[in-house]
Amino acid sequence: MNKKTILYGGVAMIVALVIAVCVSVFKFSGAQRELNEVKAANEQLQLSNEQLQLSNEFAAIDAEFQQRENDAIRLENDTILAKYTAAKAKVEELINELNNEKTKNQAQIKKLQDEINTLRGLLRHYVAQIDSLGKENAALRKENENLTGRNEQLSSRVAEVTRQNENLTEIKTLAEKLNVTGVQLTPLNKRGKKEKNVTKAKQLMVTFTISPNNTAPTGLKTIYLRLVGPEGSLLGQAGTFTFEGASLPFTEKKTVEYDGSEMSGIQIYWNVDVTLNPGDYTVELFADNFRLTSRHFTLKK
Image (tube, rainbow, N blue to C red):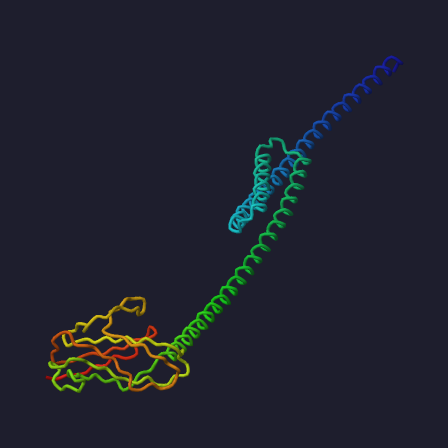
């Protein structure tokens, strides 16, 4: 074998070795590309899963915000409601950003994770504020109920004391009323003597006694007499007086000086100016805005 033949053989071996190396390198590059494509696909799948998880978390937070927003509205707290509204808008913005993200990026996912954690913190803070306000409102409602109950008790007590005072005032007023006894109605003839036949009477005399009363105010007392005949009409009309806010006509009146002691034999006369008929007559006596007595007498013919 000559040198030329050996040289050609060596070159052929080198060329074959280079070709083999090139083939190996090509195959390795293809395998590496396939490996990189698989890793990228896995990474995108992982990012898609994380994006889906974030979207679900956002939806849950959004639902919690809506529920607490209703609580904030019920509590009528404008400040918390305004913060809720801003946070809710941010949630919706991040959800849209996630849904519109075409290429999944780890840095973007990390950024969204940080923002969602911030929103969670805000939510917990707002929830704590709302719960606190709810407890405060419940305490205030309870306090108001207690105050209302106490006011009702006080009002009831005031009403009771007022009724007691009114009763005491009424008792005191009644105690000041003059008490008359021994009331009599007697027909008299023209000589001032008792007349049995009422149709012949020229005067009707009413006699009575004022009992002692240390409570009644002393001084001049005007006593008004009303005589009502069997027909139901007032006999005579010497004037009117005020009784319980109304103006009443009277038959006769008499003024006496009362000192708190008994006054007996008081007489009031009425001169007959009409024909009297037998029947039932009513005698009423008034003084100091009180009806002192109302008595019925039967006068015969």
